Length: 78
Image 1 (cartoon, rainbow, N blue to C red):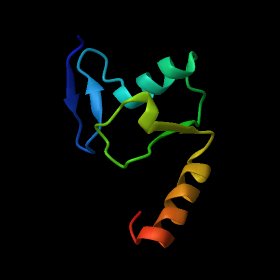
Image 2 (image 1 turned 60 degrees about the vertical axis):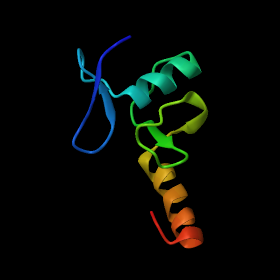
Image 3 (image 1 turned 90 degrees about the vertical axis):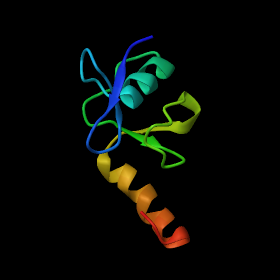
Image 4 (image 1 turned 180 degrees about the vertical axis):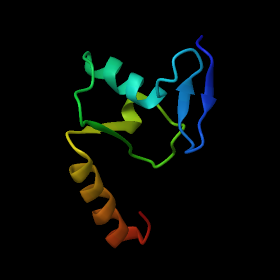
């Protein structure tokens, strides 16, 4: 098992490469590399929960932010 650490923003990264675990996990789940500009979202907002079922890929930061804005209206938090 690869070693990981938690970065300053709370995301898990692989110790040997610095690659974020959530982006790696989403890429493996989709069977392709992430494209430039694609953003990986944690559905349950837990940054260390990198199960493929908890990850959603958006084509842009703008589309990702729209989900946060909608949720903020419903729940009161980003």
